[in-house]
Every structure is written in C-alpha cells, then in structure tokens.
Image (cartoon, rainbow, N blue to C red; front, top):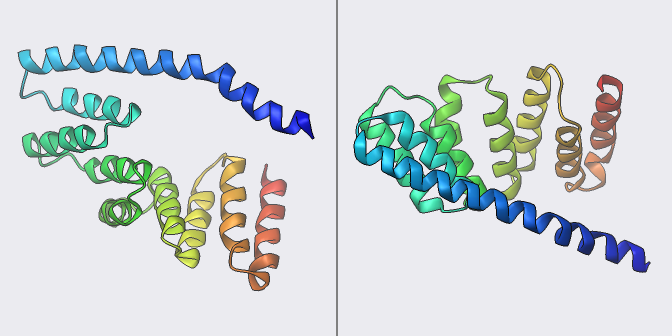
Length: 179
C-alpha cells in the first residue's frame, strides 16, 4: 500500500525539474518572439507562435490576445478558432472551448484534434452523448488512434450508468482489436 502512495510522489518529484526547465525555455522563446514582433509587427506567424508559447506556460489571456491579434492582421487564417478552443479547454473554460471548436469544425469537420478537444469540452459540460460521438468520429478518422481516446470514450459512456456499460465495454474491445 505504501508503494502505491509513494510512486506518484516520486514521479512528481522526478518530473518537476523537467517541467520547470521546459517552462524556462518557453519563457525565453516568448522574450525572443516579443523582440522579433517589435521588429516585424505585421508578421502573423510570430503572434501565432507566441500565442502557443503563452498557452504552454498557461498565460491564457496573453495567448488569446496573440491569437486575436493574428486574426486581426490576417482574417484568412482559419485555424484561430481551433487554437483558441485549445486554450479555453486547457484553461478549464469548456463552454468557450465548445463555441470556438464548433465554429472551427463547421469548415473542418474531419479535423481529429479539434474533434478530440470538443469531445473533452463536451465531457466537462456533462454532454455525454455529444462527447462520445466526437470521440467515435475522431477514432474513425485516425489511422493510428491513441489508446487513451478509447479509454476516454469508455469513461464518458460508463459515467452514464449501467445503461451505457455495454457500449463502453464494446468500445474498449473495438480498441483492443484495432490496436
């Protein structure tokens, strides 16, 4: 029993320095990108990259602001709603994530990462059927699906109670066969 408690603690301690180093690198890149933006304020790609870096260090507002500014510079960029949807999901703003991802998926119905993100937003909103549907669609479209997608879909189905247990188990069996 002690070992079961100790293993997660050791993992956190072991991984903490790595995460701290990664964030230091991301913050350095933010500084570099900010300097590049000062020199080239109309270069959309710089705002998109800095928005990604802000997302990585969990500065949600700055990330969203950079994505909005990139869209203002170039209205033809069509993945801004996907990028913002990820930010909103990671910030635990599932309704905002759903709205942004719905907009994106209107024109990109087969975008696997967007379907998975919206499935997770639906899950956080308690929209079990919509979540399971998005997971299923993503799994259909993915040539080599990740095992966690089958597990996440099974978990959302199983959370519906005994009525959905068979469907959850069948989905896991399908995943085992495919993988």
